[in-house]
Image (cartoon, rainbow, N blue to C red; front, top):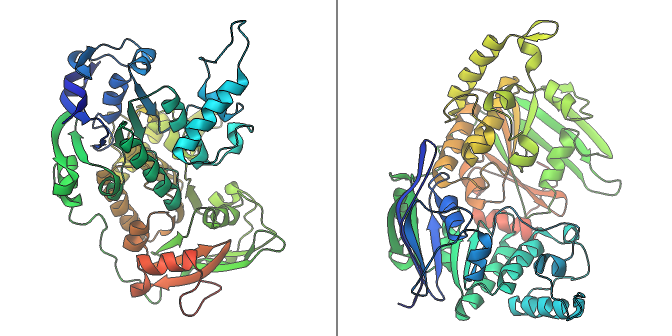
Length: 506
């Protein structure tokens, strides 16, 4: 094997925490190597060491048989290491060329920028990737997928021989993800070694050659993709075998009352008129391709997006939901797609995030908060939803994705909501935490909560939902329930719009 990268006995500690202990990783030239592990397993810390952002306490980094010590990110780049972070590092007001060459612009002998030369170099790289990028417009005007490809192009412009891809498909549609995989296969033929980090295990089997698994900051093992399966990988990641991530679906009571009745919802003057209901104790799925109108519909229901026509009843009573505050007063809460930017204040503590919408209930005098009452309520709700943290004063930014999601759920449960909208509830969450979120959702419905779940993950839609409204081009194409809910049916209606009889409402 033509080894290009070797990490031996990498160990790293932070105050009070042993982040990594004796980690080994070996990558061949032209190999796509998966790095797996739950959130908190040490993947990000290991990659930051490889990129020179952190320095290891012990261990060695060897690239092409030469020992390396990176004191900063620029040292790693000079050695041929590039990384595409999960959170983009692009400047939104600059175009693709300016982003790619930021800080290392090409200049002539007089110190003047050689814009034409940089543009040609960028065009050559995007041609190599097989993607069309408008090089003149600001990055903010490009799609998320195009921004992802600019990040990859930026790394390749640095002549990266080792490319780290951290959750690159998290915000891509299935078609965009397939294009990315095709690019990865082409880069592999060109001898570029890639470390691929993803929570979607099916992607690992589609594009990777070998897999290294970390757990609790320790090396668990390495396996060939051809000799493994999802069950084995889950067992390596979490230390136990999860036979099924999805809890059993209890039968929905035929007499379950309708808690939310969207009798008429028209987002645009000439747009389709939507109708659907939500019953007590059920999970109603919103499925469809990205851009099909799922999230826009949910936001219009709670008043976060405008609607041309809106006729909604909650528990049989007409409800005027002009904004999210109205929705909250009516008992409707939302877990937004982007929990870090829309659902949480990450610099605040767990207690502050859970209490922020509920401070009135702790008011002892006109201007004072009963902190003991607030602490007792916070401790109780953290226990109910299973938030794992040292204390309720722990900063939310330090929590794993799964625990951050639980904090958002805890806030709305603390507010006495009974209708919850979960928008991509397990995006960026590891397989063990996903199972915990699924179980929590079923526990909520067993207690009488009703849930609308918007998800781009077909297994999640099929495994969790009692009924599924399939969206296509802004309209609800059909309603599936019971045995009708399967991946083929959902994708057929979401893409072709027909499969036998169509339904205009759910």
